[in-house]
Length: 408
Ligand SMILES: *[C@@H]1O[C@H](CO)[C@@H](O)[C@H](O)[C@H]1NC(C)=O
Ligand SMILES: *[C@@H]1O[C@H](CO)[C@@H](O)[C@H](O)[C@H]1NC(C)=O
Ligand SMILES: *[C@@H]1O[C@H](CO)[C@@H](O)[C@H](O)[C@H]1NC(C)=O
Ligand SMILES: *[C@@H]1O[C@H](CO)[C@@H](O)[C@H](O)[C@H]1NC(C)=O
Image (cartoon, rainbow, N blue to C red; front, side, top):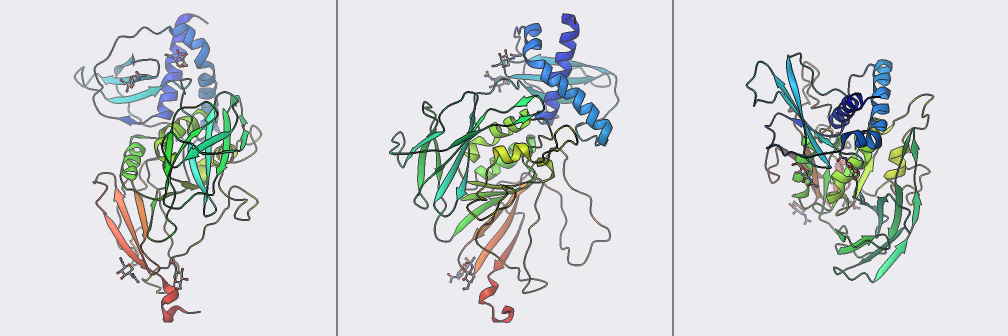
């Protein structure tokens, strides 16, 4: 293969990887820097996996005809510009002939998927007073977490287990899993992951008494909207996050689980995230990789054993809330998505609108559930276009076990 064709392949591989990994936007690009990057060597070290993946995706596309991996379709004459910013970031911009030269028809940030210093730490509750700490390293290190209630002073430690998984040609890093505790409620703990790390993280345990505040988000993905949703959530001072499915939108391409881990780490290392799987976690390929949920189960251990389940796909929590409208004694179900996924907003509705459907609007955002006391909880919906303090919609929920009319 000539250097030129390697270059072309690399560009396509980068374009493709970037298309999948990052958000796109219609902003103007920042001023470009000139950087010298040894492309031919890089093509040797980083592109084969991406090229293989490109071929695989084309194969899958033909097989399933999902079309889902493409962001933006438009026919226009023009030219592209690829600006390599530094060792981690490049910018692809499409310039259409009908526009002025400085107008960008379409813009995509691309990341270097080989560059990965982050540990992708995330934490989840185990029973009432323990926390599971999960993180990933390239090297095999002892799975130990040192922790304490003051910064830099780790009076306790615990060790756990390490695992990894393979998916086609992808080999995951070393996935470490350590349960620490017992911990005091509503307390900030400082911790480091691994025997030699100096990077300190902190988290706050959930309160043992009401009120408690949950942040709830679905279909998170890793787009510009995801970033906006995460910024809103981190400003909301919640105790625990619930994510009922569709996390990384890796959709077979395993490095995207790593980029997702990096993206959410500031939040997932800081508050417990309790997640469940959605269809984007299945990643089953008939004949090629028959086992479903491989990456999800390896990377996001939930407390299934502690809640008496045999599968990481099922676990339980204490607590129920009931709805006080329409059927005064019926359960309330909250269906949530639109956290930032690359499939875009779910804005198709059944027509005509049924009478019990009060309001319809498609917006990216997250929900908050504040359980105030034993009788009252408040559900609010926070759109990304608003300030996080603004609730675009809200409903009070009351505990029906104290309502005599609902006794069974
Ligand atoms: C690389 O460039 C991007 C975009 O200019 C910037 O956000 C990022 O911080 C840079 N990374 C490093 C390691 O310099
Ligand atoms: C991508 O990151 C790897 C690992 O840090 C580095 O060796 C390589 O040079 C980077 N690629 C580019 C294009 O800078
Ligand atoms: C529970 O919280 C609601 C809403 O904040 C309040 O109106 C109610 O008085 C509280 N009930 C008790 C028993 O404190
Ligand atoms: C609802 O009320 C019942 C009966 O008072 C109580 O046992 C239960 O804990 C309450 N639920 C919540 C979420 O506080």
